[in-house]
Length: 292
Image 1 (cartoon, helix red, strand yellow):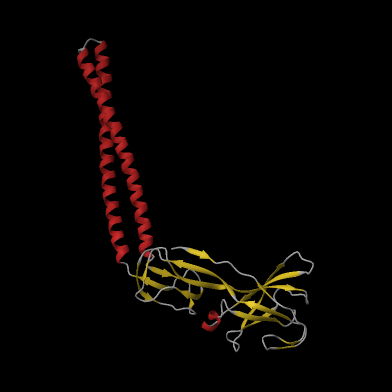
Image 2: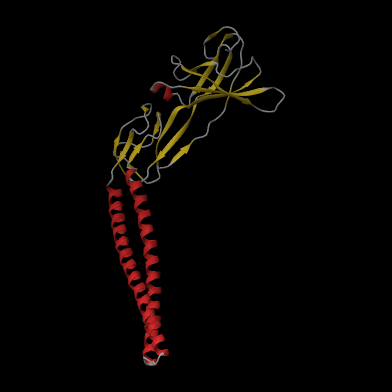
């Protein structure tokens, strides 16, 4: 499963002190009117395997909880790969067992033939055995060592293949599990790029979500009265003039270095409905009525 964080864009505002805002809202007292676009930092989920969409559990605008099922794919493709990966692991494990047994056997042969050679070499010094017998035992020892070296190479290769088979199975099991796309965090589903019965290729983007607390209205404030952290802000989406979103000033940073002082004001928003989610990416006005 792949996850990507989308960038946050900045927008421009205008400051007013009294009268009527360009959003058509009566204003009283020193206010800051911000005009721009609602944005969100989003998480994009991609398909971990190819397959046909069998179920869509949530639609754009729905609130989601971490761990909830969002989309289920057909497991047919992944099931075949999983079966092959498990068989590969079983074959590799058997090969490793056989290689280990051969290594143990040849190691024992080396120890046995070396012992006999050393024993007969000693007896040769006492005149108890013939030199040809000692030479024969030396050849047996050298042959056993050569077989043992080959068995060690075979065992090391079998171990490497077993490790690879285990890694392949782990990866395949993860892909098989990714037929269930689950919500990685609490928030809202903002976009769905598939449909029931659609076919998705591995790695294709399937949906995006906005996490709770990651919906923003950001603006550059030039001049006007001071803006302070924590001030309440009302956002009026222009696409739905009768609806509003609420938030607060979450961050203030320095803007450009021009002669006119400016500040970048970031307002954190809390969408509560599908209508609010639908306004993400659309034009809106933000009004700070008074400083705390």
